[in-house]
Image 1 (cartoon, helix red, strand yellow):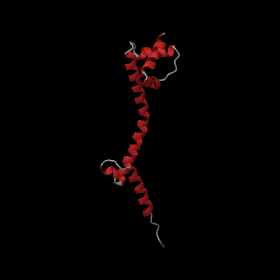
Image 2 (tube, rainbow, N blue to C red):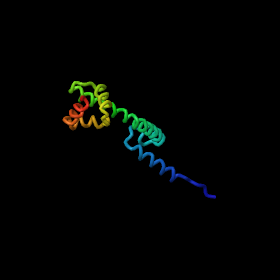
Image 3 (spheres, one colour):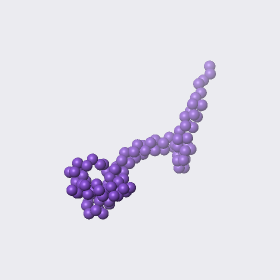
Image 4 (cartoon, rainbow, N blue to C red):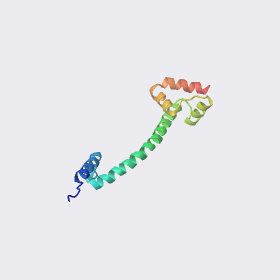
Length: 115
């Protein structure tokens, strides 16, 4: 009776995993057992970083708005409070982009909110 050999399937699985770890440092890119662990770790970090990215961008937008508003004699918290009271529905991302790309429009928004 002929035994079942799965060398081809194993080799294919190993090759696929090694191709995914191409560019990893040291043995993590070319030794199967190390590459498997490195790929698991990379996946975990990628998952975590997708959530952290949202946090980082909101922080960046806040800093940009704060810098732009300080030139006009307000603080960030006072400006955001005025936005809510004036019922302006612009989010931080839009305000940040306005402050960088169109400062004139941003100044008009601030003047509108001040009234």
